[in-house]
Image (cartoon, rainbow, N blue to C red; front, top):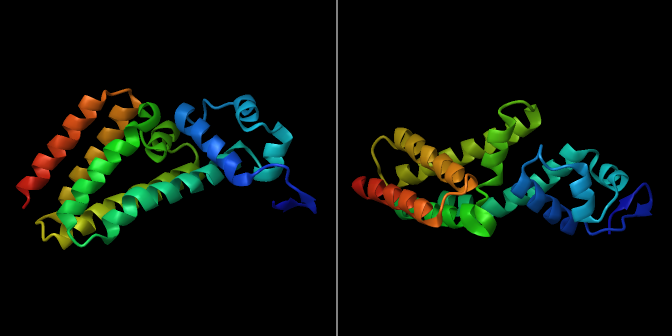
Length: 192
């Protein structure tokens, strides 16, 4: 347990962050009310604000948990794999699974990017950094594979990342997501 001004917290911080993450991921940041957070997390508004400073502070902490998970599951394997084209394909296969699990929610970071539309500097900075990292990882993987025009082609692939997320968030069927990934596979195979 962590302390606040000498007082032990009466909740598990990681459990609270996981619950907040799920709620923000399902509903979006703006659509998630403080009342819903209280009910889902089993905390009063004052406990949430004492621990996280604000609803946005809770979002940023939950987003940190999300970024750890998505980095470990999707981005780091893309960044470190020796076989660049195989790594890109694994990334898209894993991304399709990621954005369609638990009710076709898409990627929380991409969802925040679309929801925020640049209105909040802190959210914009976080989503921009993630987008840059993914695009860089795609470009580096293509470069390791010796693909011509890796930068331009990474832009194309990143457009597909966005498209997959939007399709998933919009309730696209698994068959639609599979067709999109199959199209990416055809494109990548043509670069060999």
